[in-house]
Amino acid sequence: MAITVKLPTQLRDTVGGAVSVQAEGATVAEALESVFQSHAELRDRLYQNGDLRRFVNVYLGGEDIRFLDGLQTALPDGAELTILPAVAGG
Amino acid sequence: MAAKQLKCRECSTEYALEARYVCSACFGPLEVDYDHERLADVGEVRRRIQGGPQNIWRYHDFLPLAGPQPRTRTGLPAGCTPLIRADRLAERLGLGEVWVKNDAANPTHSFKDRVVSVAATRARELGFDTLACASTGNLANSVAAHGAALGMASYVLIPADLEEQKVLATGVYGTNLVKVRGNYDDVNRLCTELSGDRENWAFVNINMRPYYAEGSKTVAYEIAEQLGWELPDRVVVPIASGSLYTKIAKGFAEFIDVGLLDGEVPTMNGAQATGCSPVAVAFRDGHDFCRPVKPDTIAKSLAIGNPADGPYALDLARATGGSIDMVDDDEIRAGIRLLAETTGVFTETAGGVTTAVLRKLAETGAIGPDERVVLVITGEGLKTLDAVRDSFPAHEVDPTIESFEEAFAESVPA
Image 1 (tube, rainbow over the protein chains, first blue to last red):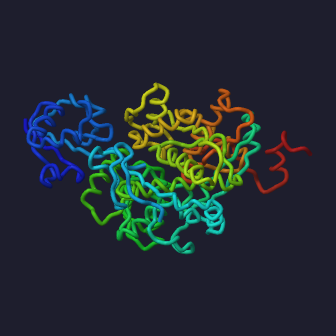
Image 2: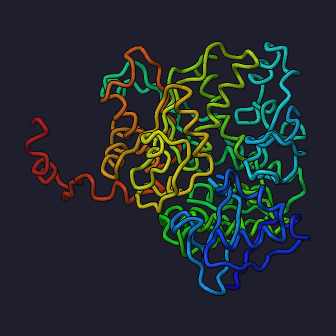
Image 3: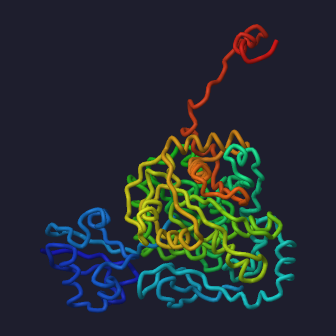
């Protein structure tokens, strides 16, 4: 399934400056894994010990995936994921 | 300036002192790193503080500005708010010594003026012409006012359901006021996305966050100076993102490090509303991270469901022998009344949370009889009037002695 992954400015250097990349997968984990296939450097920037780093937020349709099923959250075709730094605000 | 660089709290990667808030390597938060070596002459440092202006710029040596001490009669100087000895509150709670740091006495009536003063001044140094923020209300007031005072455009984004008083006290300054249909965490997400694309905007609590957060240290500096260069034993602080709570401890630690104070960082108690208590719940459950929540509380200024500094707040509470406690909406309303009736300080809902947590700590015996406790009151009661509406009787009388005496027949001696 075709997924769009929007990247924050802090990660765009890993994908040649692009604002977003295309992904494939039925879950958030699968979609990210498909991105790592072509942009290997992203994995260590986003993951630690096989899970999202604690200061990385991923949103599906504006909802933090931690409120859904985390990395196992199912993705409809055409879904848009947004990755953002967690440390902001307050 | 004494600030050397920005440094990642997680992996220690270093960056120049730019408008940057997150580590490119690990997404950890960046913090200002100082060289306090040059403050070796403690007597001179103390004299410079005491000879400084009656606002936060007296602590210029400890703030992340490149330029000289800002001119103090321009802009919107914050700080030097009263520290009040609250004997009647202490007596009511069975405590020995309680002080109230009343930060409602800032220019826009909350502690946010401290952080915005630092962020806005640093933003001008870095060449920004526009201020912006994601706010639960008090920050909105302060950013709009600082924009007006400094002649900078401003964009203030707030949840659409904010208290009317906080909306009015923002729009009046002529800002671009944006009511977002969502909660604070939605507003914050939107601003985080916007900040990536609006490179000439200084989002005070996003791309300026390392500088902004440093402003909260001045609460600790003032408490110590107002106590005659002594440390309190315990400080009770409200927690939204956890930034104020952790930076107050950093302020005490810095003054201890350079030799301005003798002793240890006080026991740090954090206060949250039950309806938005991700940090208090994580503390109770022994976790070192916070699970985000959807806020539902009258303490809207503390309604951050995904607190950025939550993990550091948990570390601090445990390291100082403190705790992070929560109180429900009725306890919050009672806290507002307790503070008002015993000190004459009318605080907003966040102060009700803090006071109610102090009461809870007193009742559970967590506070020793000889402790010197400081209660940090962060905002003004006139901004959250719904919390006290219809909570007391008023006597309506005719303008005659007879009518007055009839109303008070039982309580006024003849």
